[in-house]
Image (cartoon, rainbow, N blue to C red):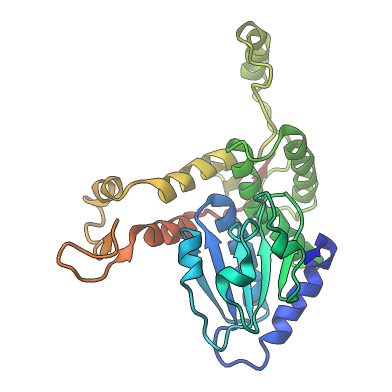
Length: 300
């Protein structure tokens, strides 16, 4: 069934209520392998932690993996982050008494989710990036913070650089988050719009000669004290590299620093000696999740 974003708070309160009579992890988070999903689940887990709700998080590489899953009797609520809108969720997951909440920017929507006759699948109908939707939930719960704003911006930027959102919708959301940034309490950083006037003006002067009509686009940077600055687009490309780098590339990069970091991982389900291995993409997911930078200070 379709729920508007105004009902996010109602859904989350139901998740918290369903967790009261359980003794283990009552929430399962199934997360797609992309930057927007990682940013979205980072916001969502912080909200669950604030309510003392135990959860399990599983990265998802494909629908075949989802179809093979079995669930503990303690699981009451399942969140699908960018991995559920295009499939028949009820049939694929073989649901019994679990409630499923789909936060997915992919289209088209599977009609079985839209007209769910079982009443167990809730689909939030909004084509915005998943991270911006989970930030909307945080705002409705009065739990929006600078960290959550940054995570939402990273998710939005990922959609834009990957050409998964058009310029008009991107600029509209950029304006929204500019207002969110300006509303944040000052932590010693700067909320001023930063312009490198000389370079920008020169580029604008010569851009039409090369057909570069949209050379610049609005974005954000985050600064740690007076030391480090992170551009949202650079963060997206860095996290994407961690998610997508082949195993042999990662082993070569880590060989001199952490030689045993990828021990027990393989591109296949088994190591060369036949023993079970952890899929490499699981390692990549958690590496990218841990690498997502949270710093203080702002530039727009």
